[in-house]
Image 1 (cartoon, helix red, strand yellow):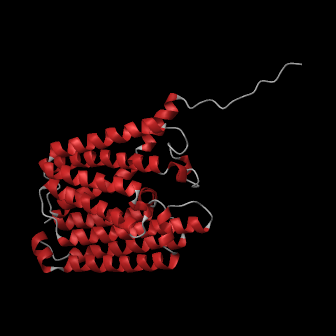
Image 2 (cartoon, rainbow, N blue to C red; image 1 turned 135 degrees about the vertical axis):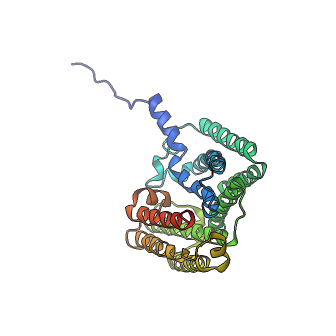
Image 3 (cartoon, rainbow, N blue to C red; image 1 turned 90 degrees about the horizontal axis):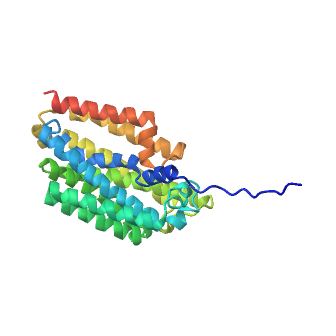
Length: 305
């Protein structure tokens, strides 16, 4: 009788490791860095070739550093991710990307992004350095502290806005700062709600979740969303904004802001799909249509005069 031969699972191929390394960068999350374009867009100068080139260059420098931050997060969270129903498939948690290689990728991306930022504009370089320092602290400690964790997320979006202002050489108004901070808080609370649902189902989640519960998070979402909509309407009817932008019809775009908030609430409370805001934007047609309508209507009001 012929002997039996044990069959072992083959080790990952070079191609599989390469694709896992690309996934580690979370390139789809670069959508968030689109906030760098907002200052130039609202100032009506986004179509100026020199401004556009400068902001696009800054976008890639910021994205490089942001990918480095995601790598660091995955290194720090590898054990926790292995107990998560979805995050266990991440490249580091699954073992596809070795830890030593991941550390090298983090250092290369952080250094490359920072060097590119300083070459573009020293002020942009310091803003990106602040973003990196905050996120290193976030990865090692701050993400474990309730309220502090979502504040860091919101500050990250403010740094994107400030960076866009520096790159486009346009001033940042208090309105865009307020609305960016509030919108980021709303999205962060929605993510914490998803964590709470996973925790209720017995899944391992981040430590800071002990500082939240569903009533608090859902009330906070309603509160922040309400303030965001009111702030946007006040911005759209502000006399100084109308004078600066050359139109008093900006309030029409408030329709898309309200619809976007309602759709996000529907996804969160009805469909329970708030784990990844980026994936929602990239996959939900309704959100895409609302965002497109907002951008197009704003573009017509700001650039067609």
